[in-house]
Each structure stands twice: as structure tokens, then as C-alpha cells.
Length: 82
Image 1 (cartoon, rainbow, N blue to C red):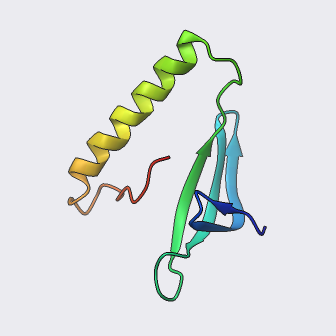
Image 2 (spheres, helix red, strand yellow; image 1 turned 90 degrees about the vertical axis):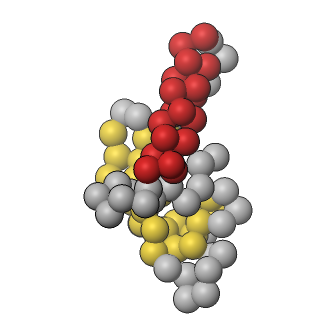
Image 3 (cartoon, one colour; image 1 turned 120 degrees about the horizontal axis):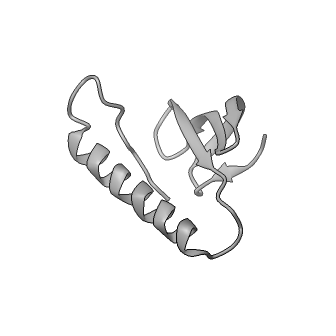
């Protein structure tokens, strides 16, 4: 895999997949020594329906909430949402 996701994450391999998308092991090229990260790529329908807009809105709110709570050691840290 030679693709840079988000201009930052070098995908190493697929960790898993389901109907909603894929989860990858990736290296973060914005840090020295390229630390490993887990990247989740969601596959949304191609149409611009209200349901898609609603799902995107919910995901943004979830990412923002996790970002505020990420100082807790049991909550994954969100580094980037795009």
C-alpha cells in the first residue's frame, strides 16, 4: 500500500473491514520515526442524501466529543478527523 491517507498516514495493512469501511494499521509521517496508528476509513453512500448528511454530522460530533475526553486513559485519542 503506497497511498497516503489524509496526506499524512501511510497505510501498512488492513486490520479488518465490514460494510461501513475498513480499519488499517498505518504510520504517521508527520512524526519522527513514523509511529504506528490505527486509521478507520468509513464508506458512506455516494449520494448526497439527507441521511448521509445526518451520518456525517453525527460522526463529526462524536469525533469532537472523543477529542474533549481523550485525556482519559481508557478513551482512544483522536489525532485527526477528515
